[in-house]
Length: 369
Image (tube, rainbow, N blue to C red):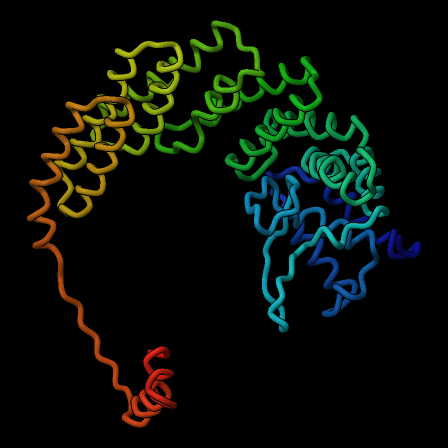
């Protein structure tokens, strides 16, 4: 995969990456590699770089947890973007078509040889994800184990630049551990998820809390102790209580806590607790509405609350909200403003358009219109 000099250059780059001490993300690693590629191989580096460097850049350009099923490949990883080329055909960057069996083999070697957990996790997971589609053979069990253990280390040592990305990785680690049916690894990932939420959770950042509930308590395949369940639920209860007493009226955050709690209480048939947490969320939202100057915005918020009440069978409360919505209707109409814009169309363009419509016999013209 390249001459000796090329391999030596790449080895130097990889040593630098392996010794990174600052928090970093995959995009930054890709940019570091591309910067070196441009310096060493010129402006047309994409055509001139050795396959090892191409494999390295590609590895960190793939998007993890790819959600677009229309352009995806049925894999966990997907292209960074999909753009039309000159022939208006979709071009994927990077593409699964660019992955060769030798690149898979190279990633596997790098997963075993690398020291930095972000590198190890990416290489190993790529091998696990693409081996069967590219090589037609199932990957080694050890690749999933390396990916899981590296993700645990990333979370424990705060190695990644973005906390929200670490949560995505922990979700992936749990999925891999469950697919292996490895009880010890499942338990390790579970403990890491709980510990990581305790470390990063901030009330005003809903994306950084609640994931222990989503990934663990809602997952029947994960065994939680009664104490762990109680702690996860208690954390959400305490957050909801703080939101209900906060002068900021953050009903989005209150909703995130309340909906999780309501769904949990529904599963264990605690209807009064369902009602309690949803009404608490409703009070936070209605307080926010009371200081909201725009009636149109207030109606949007209250409509959301109305649907939430109905979903949890709080019909009387939903009817009360619908009355408030009707009251705000007149005020919302008065807020509407007319916006005018004029466009000048040349007479010859209008005539050309009309002539194109009425060209031919009467029947053809009428069908065209």
